[in-house]
Image (cartoon, rainbow, N blue to C red):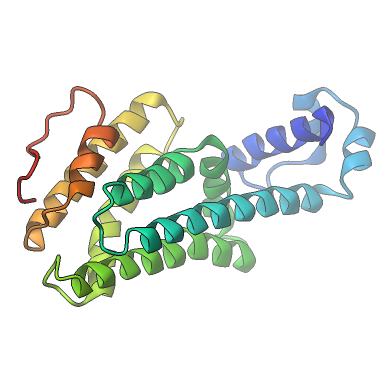
Length: 230
């Protein structure tokens, strides 16, 4: 991909994620990139083509991350490998919700879902349907392995994900995506996960201790000790 085309995409995404697709014109993009409109039309048929390419790149990245999560779940079917929860948090939190590109696309979708049924479907699929389906699978496997007692995995998925979504909306999708907000999100997400597993009856998993060591920001207080029941 040429440098100019990449600049057009990057700039368009910046503007779309701040103002919405409908509020941004080709002229706005050109002014920010400091190029003529003919340069945009050399690379893209129209503004819709710019949006389409951004969405294609996002869906390719989201599919890659989902495949990585599903592979981790298959490899850690007995949850004894020590890396499952760390992989999950790294994929969904670090590489998805807190990734600059994915974060901007999700902001764009959030704005445009109010005006476009197609965008609403894309937003719902990647923000709710896929994460909840994956988490439902995880809790089904935990229940089948006898690690947790509850068997309503769909309910547990919603109970687990709802606070994560709340923290994300407040800290990652409101205002500038700063490192300070990322750190607060990590802290709040960790506290929720710790409390969640306490509430559902206790889990004794190496993965959660690994998660605690690797994912929680340095300096965060934690009540999790090696070998302790969560």
